[in-house]
Image (cartoon, rainbow, N blue to C red; front, side):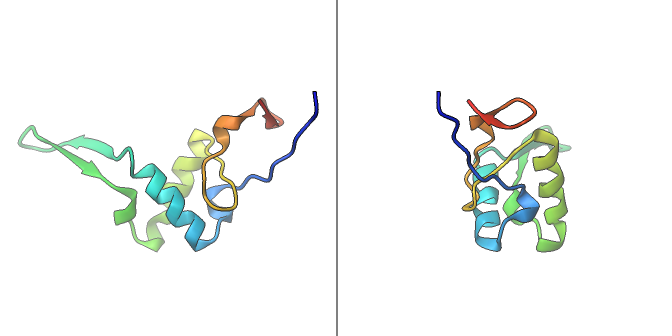
Length: 86
């Protein structure tokens, strides 16, 4: 089996366009919350200001999300502590 290598990035290391792609990806599954009246609402990451991007950065770090240079998720391709390709 040949070893293949791929560059991966954390959210904080991406440029603005790539960060926008990450936010778009995250917003496909918005955070649901229950309102006082019992109905449900949704929080979208795109509603955060640039000053609040630390929230996205922390969430990506906690969940082990990694991205290519365009902001496309690649963490599902990796395994193990050394981040070897599956």
